[in-house]
Each structure stands twice: as structure tokens, then as C-alpha cells.
Length: 123
Ligand code: TYC
Image 1 (cartoon, rainbow, N blue to C red):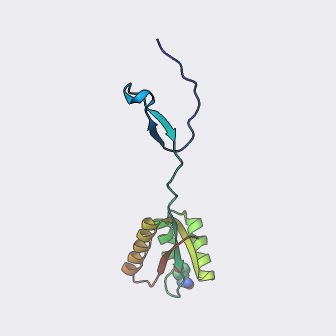
Image 2: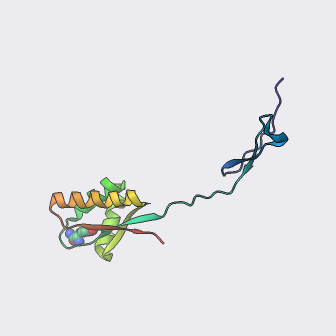
């Protein structure tokens, strides 16, 4: 015979066995929800710096290619960097942000441009 259980959605968070009613001989396990302990990862922003030599078009293509922006957003970001001296191209977990910086610096070096970018923790 099928027994029907009430369909109540479980709240988020892990569950842990706490005790076995009846001395544990019957195979029953009581599960209790425990508070979530993991924190979201520290995020890092990739900041690109202005210089007087890197062509605007190269910067736009780099921002499109490595930061997944469409041409219009990439152009806006490039112009902000050009006018303000620096600008955020994207926000990622630490390792991904470091990889983006390496990719940009490699591409700039290969093309012979002095473009610089760094990553820094957000807040
Ligand atoms: N200032 C550069 C020029 O006038 C363009 C530029 C924009 C360079 C953004 C770097 O991160 C940069 N050619």
C-alpha cells in the first residue's frame, strides 16, 4: 500500500543525522537541518588601466574577447577607461580574475602594446 507524504518544500541548507530513535537497531535515522556554514567566495574585479599608446580598437576587442561584452558595452568601458584612467571590465572569483589578467597581459604583450590590467578584491 502506498502511503502519501505531505508535499512541503524543504528549506535550503544541509541535513545531518542526529539520533537513531529506538536505540538505532531498527534502521531509522532522524535528520535535522543544520545552519549553512559556507560563505560566498570573495569576489575580485578586473580593472584595466589607461595608457597613451594602446589603440582604442585593440582595447575594445580585448574587452569583447576576454570579458564577454558585446561591442557596444566594450566600447563604453574602453571610453570610460580612456577618460577616467581606469575601469572595471568584470567581477569574478579570485582565480578566474587572475586568469583574465594574464590573458589580457599576454594578448597585449604579443601585440606589442603596453596595456595594463590588475585584479583587486571587491569590498
Ligand atoms: N588612451 C588610449 C588611446 O588614446 C586608448 C586606451 C583606452 C588605452 C583604454 C588603454 O585601457 C585603455 N589610444
